[in-house]
Length: 110
Image (cartoon, rainbow, N blue to C red; front, side):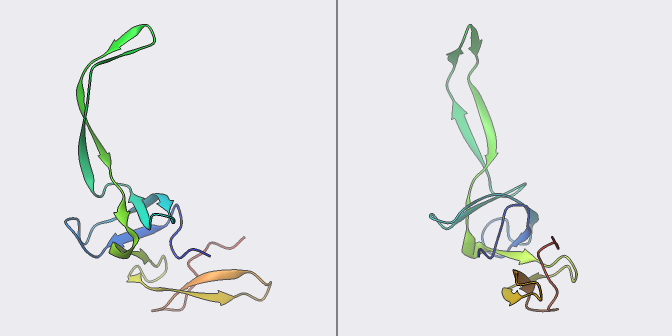
Protein backbone atom coordinates (compact mmCIF):
# COMPACT_ATOMS: atom_id res chain seq x y z
CA UNK A 1 0.00 0.00 0.00
CA UNK A 2 1.34 3.41 -0.93
CA UNK A 3 1.85 6.15 1.62
CA UNK A 4 0.88 8.94 -0.81
CA UNK A 5 -1.97 8.55 -3.29
CA UNK A 6 -3.59 10.62 -6.02
CA UNK A 7 -6.03 13.13 -4.50
CA UNK A 8 -4.18 13.50 -1.18
CA UNK A 9 -3.22 16.93 0.13
CA UNK A 10 0.53 17.19 0.68
CA UNK A 11 2.94 19.83 1.97
CA UNK A 12 6.38 20.43 0.47
CA UNK A 13 9.04 20.14 3.19
CA UNK A 14 12.19 20.78 1.10
CA UNK A 15 13.18 22.73 -1.99
CA UNK A 16 12.23 26.05 -3.57
CA UNK A 17 8.50 25.62 -2.82
CA UNK A 18 8.98 24.67 0.85
CA UNK A 19 5.85 25.20 2.97
CA UNK A 20 3.36 25.13 0.08
CA UNK A 21 0.42 22.73 0.00
CA UNK A 22 -1.36 21.19 -2.95
CA UNK A 23 -3.33 18.23 -4.23
CA UNK A 24 -1.52 15.23 -5.71
CA UNK A 25 -2.21 14.99 -9.45
CA UNK A 26 -0.03 11.96 -10.27
CA UNK A 27 2.25 9.48 -8.51
CA UNK A 28 5.12 7.67 -10.24
CA UNK A 29 6.28 5.03 -7.71
CA UNK A 30 8.87 3.47 -10.04
CA UNK A 31 10.65 6.83 -10.35
CA UNK A 32 9.95 7.94 -6.74
CA UNK A 33 8.24 11.07 -8.12
CA UNK A 34 5.01 12.97 -7.52
CA UNK A 35 3.20 15.83 -9.30
CA UNK A 36 1.47 18.38 -7.06
CA UNK A 37 -1.05 21.00 -8.23
CA UNK A 38 0.32 24.56 -7.92
CA UNK A 39 3.85 23.52 -6.93
CA UNK A 40 7.20 23.28 -8.82
CA UNK A 41 6.28 25.20 -11.97
CA UNK A 42 8.64 24.96 -14.95
CA UNK A 43 8.53 26.70 -18.32
CA UNK A 44 8.74 24.70 -21.52
CA UNK A 45 9.33 26.25 -24.94
CA UNK A 46 7.26 24.75 -27.75
CA UNK A 47 8.04 25.17 -31.44
CA UNK A 48 5.49 26.27 -34.01
CA UNK A 49 3.90 23.22 -35.65
CA UNK A 50 1.14 22.01 -37.89
CA UNK A 51 -1.72 20.33 -35.99
CA UNK A 52 -4.10 18.81 -38.51
CA UNK A 53 -5.22 21.61 -40.81
CA UNK A 54 -4.35 24.50 -38.48
CA UNK A 55 -1.10 26.16 -37.43
CA UNK A 56 -0.11 26.26 -33.73
CA UNK A 57 2.16 29.16 -32.85
CA UNK A 58 5.36 28.91 -30.85
CA UNK A 59 4.73 29.51 -27.15
CA UNK A 60 6.10 29.14 -23.64
CA UNK A 61 3.99 26.74 -21.58
CA UNK A 62 4.08 26.68 -17.76
CA UNK A 63 3.38 23.29 -16.16
CA UNK A 64 3.93 21.44 -12.89
CA UNK A 65 7.03 19.23 -12.86
CA UNK A 66 7.45 16.10 -10.74
CA UNK A 67 8.95 16.36 -7.24
CA UNK A 68 10.83 13.69 -5.34
CA UNK A 69 8.60 11.77 -2.91
CA UNK A 70 11.01 12.48 -0.06
CA UNK A 71 10.34 16.23 -0.38
CA UNK A 72 6.62 16.02 0.52
CA UNK A 73 4.55 14.81 3.47
CA UNK A 74 0.84 14.00 3.69
CA UNK A 75 -1.42 16.52 5.45
CA UNK A 76 -3.79 14.87 7.92
CA UNK A 77 -7.43 15.88 7.21
CA UNK A 78 -8.40 15.86 10.90
CA UNK A 79 -5.50 17.69 12.61
CA UNK A 80 -4.44 19.72 9.50
CA UNK A 81 -0.71 19.09 10.11
CA UNK A 82 1.77 17.37 7.85
CA UNK A 83 2.65 13.98 9.25
CA UNK A 84 4.18 10.60 8.69
CA UNK A 85 1.86 7.83 7.58
CA UNK A 86 1.27 4.63 9.51
CA UNK A 87 -0.90 1.64 8.71
CA UNK A 88 -3.64 -0.05 10.73
CA UNK A 89 -5.99 -2.97 10.11
CA UNK A 90 -9.67 -2.03 10.51
CA UNK A 91 -12.27 -4.31 12.08
CA UNK A 92 -13.69 -5.18 8.65
CA UNK A 93 -10.27 -6.43 7.47
CA UNK A 94 -9.17 -3.45 5.36
CA UNK A 95 -5.71 -1.93 5.77
CA UNK A 96 -5.89 1.87 6.12
CA UNK A 97 -3.44 4.75 6.40
CA UNK A 98 -3.36 6.61 9.73
CA UNK A 99 -1.85 9.87 10.96
CA UNK A 100 1.10 9.30 13.30
CA UNK A 101 0.34 12.52 15.25
CA UNK A 102 -3.38 12.17 16.03
CA UNK A 103 -3.93 8.49 15.08
CA UNK A 104 -6.89 9.41 12.83
CA UNK A 105 -7.58 7.60 9.55
CA UNK A 106 -6.37 9.39 6.42
CA UNK A 107 -8.33 7.18 4.02
CA UNK A 108 -12.00 7.89 3.49
CA UNK A 109 -14.34 5.14 4.67
CA UNK A 110 -15.72 2.86 1.99
